[in-house]
Image (cartoon, rainbow, N blue to C red; front, side, top):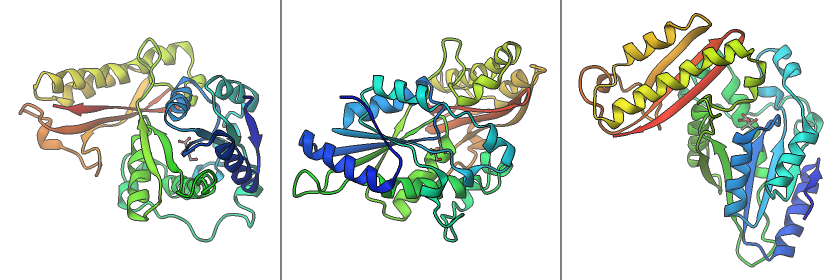
Length: 299
Ligand code: PAF
């Protein structure tokens, strides 16, 4: 079936209800995106299609989560290519609203406050970013909620988020738990290019030389993962030194944290073998481009 494009919340509700009825479906998946889709998003869509009868992908470049107006303007808009990628993955519906549809009265007066989990790591260098991201995610989760279209019981409702944005994922999970959103959040693993670089819509801004330099991020993470798997001390300092040895890369942070609270697991990383569950987080500027990456640890 050809993919359909809707631009209003009313259109999304009507079309998803019609599709659920038509398919006799009992589940709906939502994949929130800002477009400029790549193989990482394709993996989100593929996972959603495998687990749900009806799949909606939203494409909305959310002004609330951008600090600088210039970043918002520069964000790539590639709707035609995005639609082709999603159609190939078997997505049913794309919801691509304009700013007026999402924020009809201008910027919302009432917003989600992301709280202390948003103050560190990415939040430290992007004040207000996670409040803006959670506010739009809350709205998208509401408008993407399936109605009781097909059966007497409510359809299952799942939403898909990439593990690459680990802090965003932790915050969305917290919001859904703390505020009782009736949706299951499904984390989807990072997709990497053959050379190890985590896929991101920002990679297109890297020169060939910067792309080569950026590979030190995944190499350093791999080092930490190997040490965790070998039950060795993680020795973060030597992994940080590896990143610092690359002149085009300016390290912001490289830490091992608890995956839920995002608090550093410092004592686990020095001289004693790593035990338990962790998440190695890294962020760096490569030339003009800020990149993030992470790897889950389980030892
Ligand atoms: O991860 C993103 O692309 C965005 O932060 C999201 C979740 C679509 C909200 O705008």
